[in-house]
Image 1 (cartoon, rainbow, N blue to C red):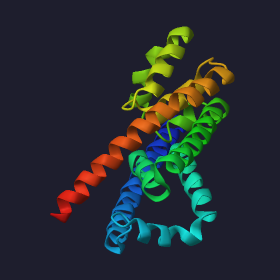
Image 2 (cartoon, one colour):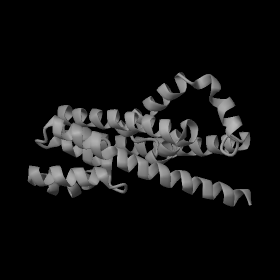
Image 3 (tube, rainbow, N blue to C red):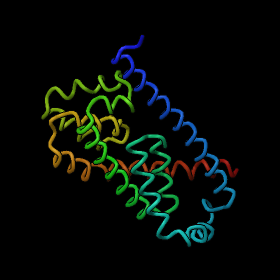
Image 4 (cartoon, rainbow, N blue to C red):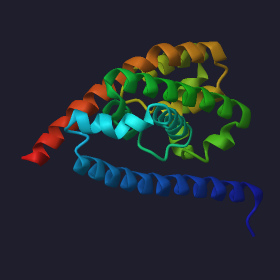
Amino acid sequence: MIDGDESVHLSEEKSRKLINYATIVSSIIIVLLVIYWYRLGIFTDQDKMRAYLANKKIIGPVVFVLIQIVQVVIPIIPGGISLLGGVVFFGPIWGFIYNYIGICIGSLINFFLARYYGRSFILHIVSEETLNKYMKWAKNQKRFNWFFALCILAPAAPDDVLCLLAGLTEMKFWTYFWIIILCKPWTIAAYSLGLVYGARWLLKLIGK
């Protein structure tokens, strides 16, 4: 017979597996879409890209921002791919703005979800081992605040996990808010530029 704690653990493990499967499926779909768009020529021809987006001036950005929010709260789409999508389809300036808005809103939602639902909610998304690895930084709130800010500023840090963890600590909301608002732009810009130039290099390589 399965007791309550074991039942919760199995439920958390099942949730993480579903998210992992959804991530794999969404990645495959995105790759197929990229191949389709590449064959349409929208990555290599500005006129074709403008024509493709001509009737999506309003709904396109709205849908994209919503996708960014969802992928931050429920990470089923690799963040790097969605960042690249924003810059490719909307250009470097508006792509950056839409990425920034969606990611910031998603990060704020993560904070409130973790604070309201607690550790059990987080364990539906990340493993207990991963969470415990970063929990040691939360023993000293002042030290965690600085650690959190530096990680949000660093491109390779596990932002989503740390945003959830921040909700479990005594960090004040406005401290969290300003860290996200002020530090996220630099990370998004670094990722976007790296991904765009990397994608261009890859497309040129494929074209050869």
